[in-house]
Length: 255
Image 1 (cartoon, helix red, strand yellow):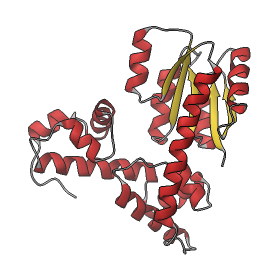
Image 2 (spheres, rainbow, N blue to C red):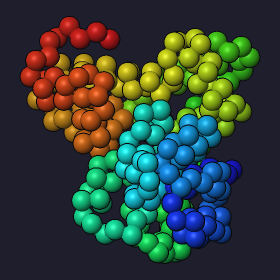
Image 3 (cartoon, rainbow, N blue to C red):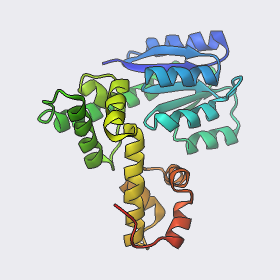
């Protein structure tokens, strides 16, 4: 299986060098798009649904960190490797908060890049095996509604695990955009939004019923290993931080 990558780098020679190292890594990754600005990269991500984004930080129009934040709006499972000529700790700290897989300094070391890509490929293969167990006996449907229902049932059941829509689409022999389309038609929201909404509802219920549970335990229970990322997602969708919600929560939070 090939895993699609978008490379965002405004310096052409460096971009070409990174692409060459990815294509020669032997890890199953293939470059499906390249961009010199964050805006171009975001358009490519929205159109091609890659597994991985490899991005510089300093780019015209939209920098790499803003690109990551915006891309995650519609692609929360997108993996990211940041490459930069700037070893400034503040950049690295912000990148870590955005859940990037690795922060590599230029010039990118080929062996280091291969190690990161191999780790990601292994993660995808393990997820594929789990999906095989989940879908092998379930998938015998034909209509778009049946496909959407199958996906909804899977998301509802596995909401507390890592979920990669690209892997699910390939397992069901559909494109990610088609799965999103039929899900939207049936449930009036994209599957990624449904998953986040479900996780937020579960998180609120856990906080209501378990007022002494630490916030990081709540986050882990609904599929977010990084407590900072969980807090940002919660605040974005609920309007308050988990801590503030807990301070004013009530016991009648809806399912």
